[in-house]
Image (cartoon, rainbow, N blue to C red):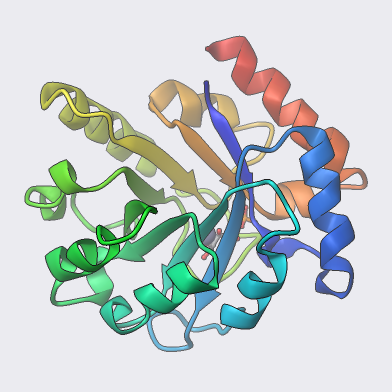
Length: 220
Ligand code: DX5
Ligand code: ZN
């Protein structure tokens, strides 16, 4: 089953609670939370207080995507704040294995993310130790950008790599996904689809999640 993870980066934060209820009713599986530090990416978004406010109010697991430098300094606080999945960027730390070791002390899923041009080779020594690989299909930092199409080959290669090692690692794809291209992303091998603007900028986000589910469920 392919999971849908709406990204609240594109939600109306004035009424975040209502926005979350809409995607819950639509049948979303996860809630994607984009954390940006103004260093790793040229944007600043949300952090601990928002995650703490959401935690316990929704049944959706919180899928926290850290676009921050030196994640090792902060990951434990994100766990304490309520993250269920913590994903860090491999480019953002000298010590990816240390980040994983820290997170493995807790009951959270661990994800590692790659920018569009970061090669899969960089996963060689981490793939066995993570639950999720998040493949960026835009340059991280902003919602509403266009899907970078060469990433489809990367997803296929990653899927082959995971299967060749008989691992259970899930592939999450993030950026520029809409109703028109989600099919190709799932066919390439995605297990988790992140969608921000195509869900929260829709007239009816609840219905849009259902539309996504109809497409992905028809493929699996
Ligand atoms: C981008 C973020 C994404 C973003 C996706 O840096 O990681 O999660 O919210 O937004 P859309 O779906 O609009 O590209
Ligand atoms: Zn994201």
